[in-house]
Image (tube, rainbow, N blue to C red):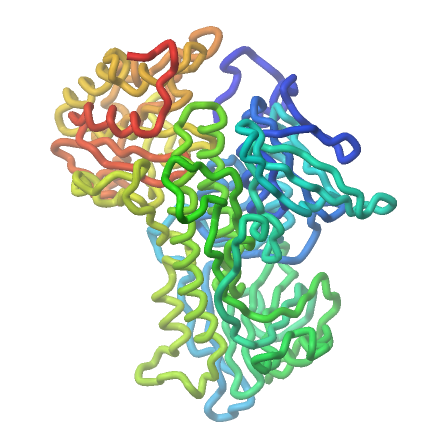
Length: 639
């Protein structure tokens, strides 16, 4: 990370040196009359969005939560590699890696043919395929994910804190108010004031308020889908057991007592068990069975035979029914209106999609929703981008959620299947085979955004086959020239609104140098056309170069001035934008990502780490046209 740009300051570099005077840090006793963005719900989706908005103190943000304080235990725990890549953009991936339980292998257990009431291990596989990501698959308490987002909010210039004990009771739109059209009714839940109502106006409202979302109801959205009519119990426990894979992720299928998903948790002792309980009738609800904690423990002990499970402490538990549902609306735009009607109300997370926890995607996909939405909202609110950018949220994330529901529907039924129903035509069990087939999906790496104004066509995809347009930018190791530091190229992308253009040099550097000259000198360049007077050169578009030579063969002082920009109040030089391929043949980024060595190329990456386009280094007009469809020309820079 970089700091001291505008002067030396002692202390924590992650903490803004002074609160912004524009901060709207509201308290539950004194609500603002109006805000730019009101977020309903302090789950992972809501806090991920709030953490992005908090970096922009000119945006008045409010996040409300019916509970009296932050989450402490329970709920989700799986963090896939894609979310870890996202955490890197926020700056806390390393902290998460240190705290969390790494899932390295998954084991599979089924009835022992010699003693069918007992289980035996029938397989084990590496949990994440080699080369998919530099990040691990980890497990950690959802509350710790919340804490890390809350720390970002508290350290920001806004010093943003949630407003607890406030529930969104209703949202209506006042079409006559073009500035703050959303009227949000908030109901207090704190003792002594429960039921009191207050009103706040907002430019935008984002409902991250769960499966029973009031915000979704307000825009006429409904969750549609089906249920598996199967009761499952989940518990986080401290226990003694002689089950040999108690510290491994394990999928256990018994002969007749049901199935268990074992998830070892952070700290070395905590473990989570998902335990299959009773089949429900079509018209029956989980609550009708009056199932208790003791039922979960007793069933788990039966499934684990011949191994023992002695539960010492139950940290958290719940009983639920599997359902697979998807909303028909991710925003408030009516279906029968034109593209000039822009959304004002959005939903995200469980308010849009619900599914089983077996694929470990709930928290991950929820954060993915608002990581997609956040930079778009900020770009529009700061008048950097056109309002039609907001249409892309529903277009992109509804398809991602649909794919999740489809996968989870199949996977949950495979896990719940009796092993006696499995096809044993080969040595590998059905559940193990399907687990391997779905590895990239559960890692969060199959989301691909289709062609749109912010995602280009694959015309020049062959120049960088390993950076597939629409997919997330797949990081690879490089050497930073200025200080010979090995680093991951993707780690230069930070949460916010900044796009990144990676210039991969061909054998001849002339095309790259010509591009750099265009970028800083040509009036059609997006840098000159969309930059504001007080902007640093990389405020909106960050230019980086990667050369094929070793870092000792590239002199930083010979790099084009576009790659060593002057920034900040002292016009200090940024030396960290020039990289070289690693000399190790196994880690050469040009080989790993199949980049055309002869001509090179440019790879354009969105603020949410997805590849927006691949172009030739000579495609200056195409680049100008691409960004012209997204950004707003600044008044003093009009052509």
